[in-house]
Length: 328
Image (cartoon, rainbow, N blue to C red; front, side, top):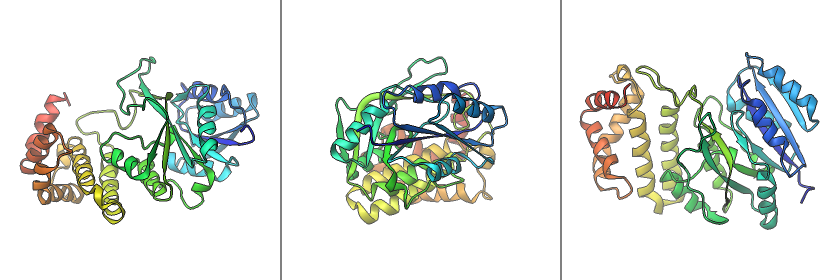
């Protein structure tokens, strides 16, 4: 098994305070046949120099410096440089347990699974465990493609590439979409169409650190991350794919589309809720078109339905009330 080489790609941008913890956790892996690829995406805080320092301490670490282009472009450069049989990804502010890659490669090679997933948890900046977003299985589980898609549509699955070990050859026809913030979802759905499913380990060995300065988590009256537009675009692409190849999941994908638009409307600044905003107008039109789907869909909660119906009728009023409720 140790003949199998794993390339671990870490896109790095201005994470001087936590990069060493991340890299140390990869260097401590019980599975030693690794190459660790640090892609410095134009850092301006000294993180690039730290990458070079860490590489000098462990010859498995390779560093590549590039102009800033976002996490997807950094990952894509890492894929060009990777020489492993399997590829894994770790975000530079997260960290992993020491036996993560040993467990994943053992399961992957035992039954020739093209993708193996480790379960994850979320931690605050002090290391305290937060409530699980993705509930891990009780034992090793093989999840066929259709079931995995259904769980993604119900927001129960994990679309992150950071929790997965993937056969390198799967990336021959695929790259991460650049310029988008919901990049993992789109690429994973494309790959799922080419495989039978994903094997999932119950161990929560990948630790996501929820940083207070995260772009998608910071809240203010006029702040708005593009991720809330990207999730709507990806929902539309998901509906096309599902209706074409998995028509039995139609109710699930309608629920997914409605939920993604709910998320958008609860975050878009009120100042952008106007006739000149074409994206906002398209979201409104979708809600009107699917008014009865909102009422009848069995996979939306009662709270979801109430919010969606009210947003269909009086979006600005609901958004103002929600803003006051959230203290925004």
